[in-house]
Amino acid sequence: MIRFVIPAYNEAENIPRLLADLAPVARELGARVIIVDDGSTDGTADVIREHARDMHLAIVTHTTNRGLGESSDDDAIVTLEADTTSDLSDLPRMLELFDQGTDVVLASVYAPGGEIIGVAGWRLAASKSVSNTFRYLGGLREMHTLSSLYRVYRAGTLRRAADTYGYLLVREPGFAANVELLLKLYNAGATVAEVPTTNDWRTRKGVSKMQLKPTVIAYFRVMAAHMVGRIQPPPVSPLAEATAPAALAAPDPLPEQVAKADPQPLAQTG
View 1 (tube, rainbow, N blue to C red):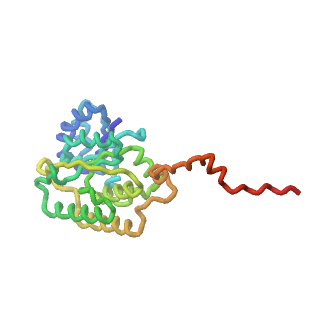
View 2 (view 1 turned 90 degrees about the vertical axis):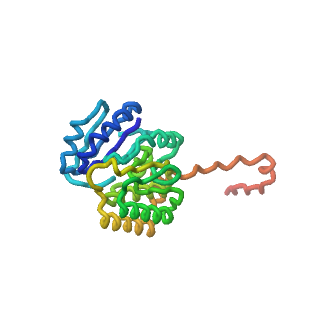
View 3 (view 1 turned 120 degrees about the horizontal axis):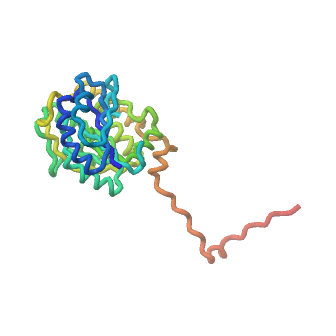
């Protein structure tokens, strides 16, 4: 089973196109769609209901904006942007890597084939700076975009992470939550892969919900937590047990090895 989980905050202008693009994909995959109306004040939930297509769709409503944070272990959880900037044509390749056993698949903007179109300069610079910092400090040097919301998660990996960290699984609000969650999953042994994508910001209506100063401060908090070891899971935890390599059983000794072994003293009887 595939589930799309889409957080939406004041995206009433973008919801009609999002659902129009997503409906045929969800129907073809037999997927369920869950849209989290995260404290919107522009009638986002009403627009979702008005433009709901012929698909299995549910709305979860938060009365206040909380920011970004019932499946089988091998179910796919797909998260994507509500502002239509996630390219659904990349999803088949992402699901292919997922089916090959990857726990987390990222849609990353990088060459070959990846491109950011029409994005404001400050956001592009901030995104690159954050990605480069965490790529090296967090051990994810081969990944290119760590803060993107467009991902495929294995449900069992998320469930074990929730059991391990509890309410501390995602401490940061907003965009920094994506980096924090990825670092915790990766450091606990989850396998991560990426596919190149294109983010075309010209398709989005309205302004970016990313607030630069709070986001940068949150990124620094995640970085500090990683540096002092708070990202690592406890040594005994559901994640550690699930990702630890299986211990090899010691082979039975050969008969000649038994014969050569020093004889053990017999117990003395009183």
